[in-house]
Image 1 (cartoon, rainbow, N blue to C red):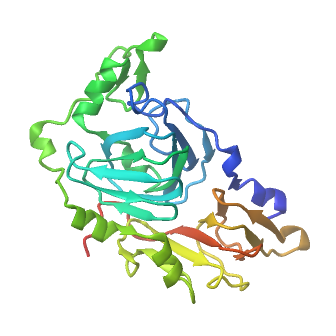
Image 2 (image 1 turned 120 degrees about the vertical axis):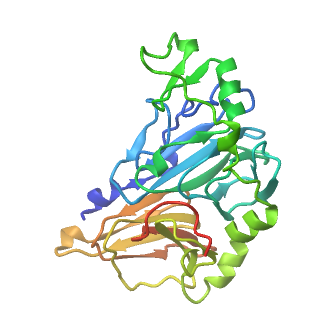
Length: 327
């Protein structure tokens, strides 16, 4: 990997390209200022306007949501894991058929692994533009988004219709459903019985870990945050690790599949080796950047400046992406 090759696999925070019409609630008041980002993989956007930064399959998808204060993402569900960590701001995550079964507030650096099969949403409750980074299980991210019925109904009242083909049609742009394409059917009451009202103890206890706890547990060696033996016990088809200044090492290592580095705090130096001098190098990663390291490349990451430093590391496993593992 030449430095230019590696740079092509880094998505800089300042270069992220948003889509403001990614999902069915893009015109719904309270949700109409969202910005969605697809960083790695095809994502789950319902809009052809969504820009994909890196399309190389990794076994999972990386995305992000940026929202101003009081802007929310509507209730939806996924068939594979949906993991968020808060990069900027203060966020309220809520869940249930009407979003009233429970809620939790997360601060910068906190992480949540939301159980599959429940409706969930989130809202920026901070005072400035906020950003949450997301990991979705599977290369196809479970085949798309499942919306709570009232979300589809509200969207239709504001000009957006979701086809059964998973694509959005905007009447404000003169679009309508193509011939032969029916609207996405609403979930029936019988189908809604399969979406449980999980308690806060279940969701928070099983799926939330706080930033400062991860910092404490990763002092001597990297902490496994999500994995079969992780702080959050799950096998979603990928593992999430957490690295700090004290647990980083200059020793090089490699993976048999692409891996992703996502700095949370501080500046990190990504160092890699190759067969020739031209294929070796180092490059600096900033908070909010996303770096994809190819399979088989010997590499490491260490802080490049003094001060607090933390980094999330994601790599696929042989476990199939699917429902949340209950142990």
